[in-house]
Length: 465
Ligand SMILES: O=c1ccn([C@@H]2O[C@H](COP(=O)(O)OP(=O)(O)O[C@H]3O[C@H](CO)[C@@H](O)[C@H](O)[C@H]3O)[C@@H](O)[C@H]2O)c(=O)[nH]1
Image 1 (cartoon, rainbow, N blue to C red):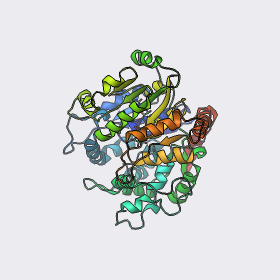
Image 2 (cartoon, rainbow, N blue to C red):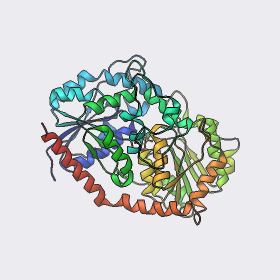
Image 3 (cartoon, rainbow, N blue to C red):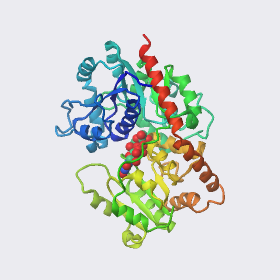
């Protein structure tokens, strides 16, 4: 179906958000939909290189308003640290006048906005544009954390104990409680910074005022949570489908191709924590020693965020004494960006130890990599429980309740379950489930059906007065 819609995409400025917005843009653009993509000036070239190149599509740089604490040279998402992230939220709030001007010039039918842009619906409403939130988080994370039932008194912040249990009416699934360290991490959502509303309040505000919400998921994987969200949101809920990332372009860098090629099929553990998740030194020590204990080859990627330090020095300082020498014939430790999808697709890679980022897990499932999860924050904890507890496609590394500590033996245990003890339970079922879900995610018809349906629903939304 060819559509004449014009949609503005306005993701949060981190690549973990920009990328799913680009993927959705490309799927919608293949139905004829025109895309105007808002981002920071320094991101334009990178977004243009991934966005479908049609005469209709364009990337529009936003001016970053002067913001105390944010350098005037700051213009790209590659430089976001947790501190600049908070300042960028302040800058985002001050972008309201320019966004209003741009929208009134562009006159799109719809704007798709992200979690921090709670003021978009009121501007869009004035201009006769439909405001639709696109959530890049799983339905399980949304339904555990960011729904009205989560708090009953808006003036009172929830406690750690409150956040250890699901909200009232939450579906009966494998998620019956969360650990103390996880609940403590969830508190972040309820805190306000720099006088802005908390993340939770921003979301509650746009849930009330937007025209619809799109979730990046499908009923086949998350139906109990999707059904529960329906009872909570009170707005049209649209689904974008399983969001399997498109196959990567190009080829794997030769040095990694050669290194991986030395090992037997499905023997290498690949370990990476996504685009914005960093382990502390204690965790790095246990993780590296755990990988060493497995006796298997491994490819470990560790990052430290941006800052005024040399990442390579930081990496060397974080490794156990004598580690590099001991593992030199079967392990690499790297800092920096790697071609994750190419690596996961390599025939030697058999296990993927990861942070449970939503896209990363799906990339693991569509390849022959058994999954082990060491989630580090927010939605990752819920993704990890959902994928290991509901879908049973992987295993969580055992963690201490109070502080999330895991030891080297816990890493070994998780890897053994999915890589070695595969004739006994739970390893046996996990392999079988993984292979079934792989077939599901690779079924092009399912994805095509979700996107065609989404286009139809967006058309209908625009027709509505
Ligand atoms: O060295 C790297 C690191 C990452 N990637 C890619 O980057 C994407 C990462 O996706 P994902 O794991 O979903 O997101 P992150 O950006 O790591 O995570 C953020 O966004 C996710 C939602 O998309 C949330 O689930 C996480 O909590 C949040 O940290 C994937 O396509 C990876 O293939 C690479 O290609 N190379």
